[in-house]
Length: 85
Image 1 (cartoon, rainbow, N blue to C red):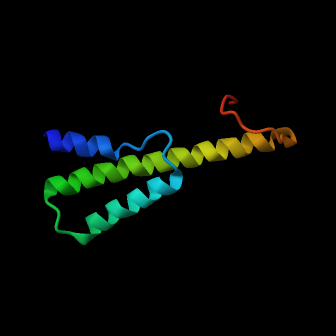
Image 2: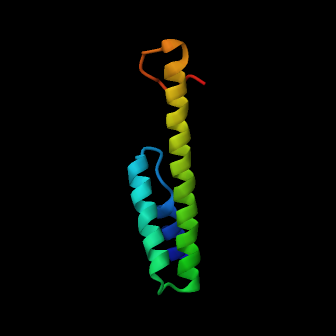
């Protein structure tokens, strides 16, 4: 059980983790799952990690899209501070 918790904690992307790093981690999870040889428990843990990574990647993309939209509003050229909505 302790090992599962450690695996789950390691799978949670940090707020500062770059999109490209998340995608690379997700690709490794997919390779492990497609490679077979995992037990049912290992497969479920890997699948859960993949879901977390996919959601984190989608969130990074949505954040980038919001930044672009804010920058394009009114032909704005000032740097994005993250405070605007």
